[in-house]
Image 1 (cartoon, rainbow, N blue to C red):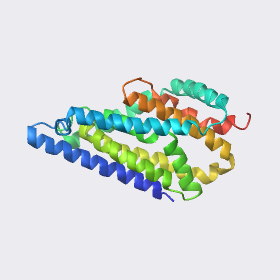
Image 2 (image 1 turned 120 degrees about the vertical axis):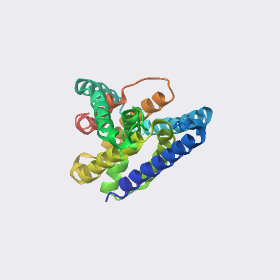
Image 3 (image 1 turned 45 degrees about the vertical axis):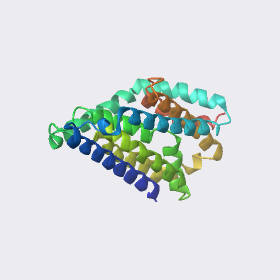
Amino acid sequence: MLTGTIVNTLAILAGSAAGLLIKALAGRCSGSLDGASLLGHRLQSIIMQGVALCILYIGIDGCLEGSNALIAILSMVVGAILGELLDLDKRMRSLGDWVQRRTAHLLGSQEPASISEGFVTASLLFCVGAMAIVGSLNDGLTGDHSTLFAKSLLDGISSVVYAASLGVGVAFSAAAVFIYQGIITLLASFLQPFLGDAVIAEMTCVGSLLIVALALNMLGVTKIKVMNLVPAIFLPILLCRFM
């Protein structure tokens, strides 16, 4: 039942391992643990920009699934209010800081204070968006793993580059992905009565808008607190019953 999520988790771990290996090899060659020195700043930048453009494409394509712009607008507005009141972005970063504190003694002085940054950045990239939610729902409802398999490929590639520059914190995001997507998959059967085609389409649309925001952040165009918009993804479940 959790096949797609397990594959996704393993892809992130494998990509992170590859990135950390690149980082370690760079340290041996240059006397530094800066993995970017091996990849080259220009190469690393163009790879991340290419991945960001792919994510942007996925987001734009998913936005076209929706048919009721009013639901998308209300979901984003109400979701933003809820996310800001709860300050999910701050809570997510606090969780990253906690992971950093808990693992600092294991890594000694070899890892700078980037564990939190790597964990938060990668967790947002891998968890936010329609592919994580819709893919997990499809996995739980129909056993269709195709969406999560496609997501696994993107996440694996992204984790190589992120781990090479941000370090082991990226690997810890695999746990966040497993818990987040696993819960959605396991709850899919209970949510099924509320998840008609129209609801899923609108959730896909709203989630894809967040993917677009995440891609724009990765490209350096914006600095949107994407985590504070996450509640918007689930609001179409309620709004579609009245609109």
